Length: 181
Image 1 (cartoon, rainbow, N blue to C red):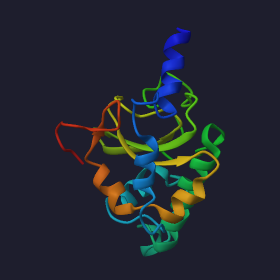
Image 2 (image 1 turned 30 degrees about the vertical axis):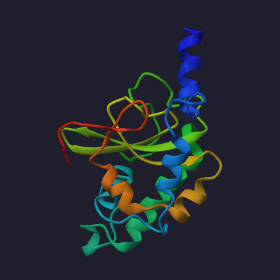
Image 3 (image 1 turned 180 degrees about the horizontal axis):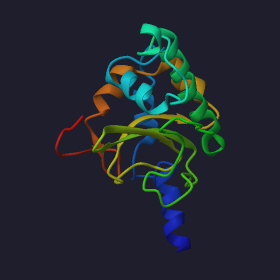
Image 4 (image 1 turned 90 degrees about the vertical axis):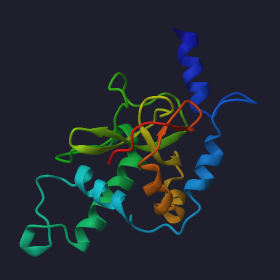
């Protein structure tokens, strides 16, 4: 058992020399944009899963999300990244957790990940500190623990949106499958 968890931690750190996933290269691609608030489909998924259900919206008399609501929910996502397992999700549908539901969401990785997975209700998002490769999810964004602001100031939201259709394998490579969103 110790050998298996050591292998997971090694993989989560970026693999052994000469093999394993290139997490640093994947991270550099993620931070090749202009940062700012989310755009495109990911903006709506973040709103859907991280909005506190107990809070009314500010748009159309409380019936729809307004500009302030998107800024608020983006801040909730940023807090989840920074706090990791200490994040309290309150009435939000999503938060920090385990990809497969069998751990506390931490595997020794020095990274925090935003991942998506298909559910009957559509794309579900969550934040984890488990390496997402070969777990049937879409790895969307990643930040080095303690350096989250670098992600938010440089994130490429177009790339994150493109990754919504890509399930990743053990080396963060695209796994062919049915495109769903």
